[in-house]
Amino acid sequence: MKVVVFDNYEEVSVQVAQLVEAQILRNDRSVLGLATGSTPLGLYERLIEGVTSRGISYQNVRTINLDEYLGLGEGHPESYRTFMTDNLFNKIDIVTENTYIPDGTPDSAEEECLRYEQVIDDVGPIDLQILGIGTNGHIGFNEPGTDSNSLTHVVELVASTRESNARFFPSINEVPTHAITTGIKSILKSKQIIVMATGKDKAEAVKTLLSKDMNESFPASILWNHDNVTLIVDRDAYQLVKS
Ligand code: GLP
Image (cartoon, rainbow, N blue to C red):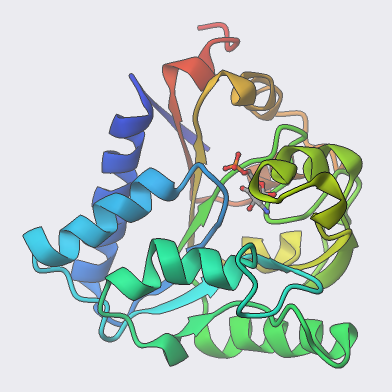
């Protein structure tokens, strides 16, 4: 795992945007793995800017998102589909049919998981996967204890994840209890992975990740099994790492 430290959130966003755009310039049919959460918002702003200022086109790009809340349909304001539409897809020239996110209101969640893993295999492999990290080390919605061989599956969200995501909902009672997430093994199928971590709230998680103790109780640590991972952090997130 390569580690790159920048001064602040802004610089992290600019750097990751450059890497994403370089990938698209290398191959305009690239498959991007995308994440939700607050961390990639600055990145998405830069990517939107890249379309108008740098002539980057997403016409042929495909995107595969990590996860979706179970029970939230496409039109729900807090579904990850809505998040991606509002914060990125509607503001770049991507074709909606080329954007993949698990269906949050499937007839059968189990069948949706199988279908989505097939999407990852048929549309992928993902050239460049962007990941955030939960304070408990979750990636996607792979909570502590997730099998490192997991493919796309239904997960029950742990209390701390529901609490930290409650900021987007009118009350914690409205935060879904379950989600569909791509598994650890699904994520490891990506050719290249960039983990973004910013802010002091992520300092403990970054310290644990960089202790190199591979353990399913800290899902992000399984990324040490992949040979092309870059952790891009700001100083706040890196502050507990002894140099
Ligand atoms: C969420 C998402 C993850 C995200 C993480 C961190 O629950 N499912 O994909 O990386 O939590 O979110 P944030 O970037 O807001 O800290």
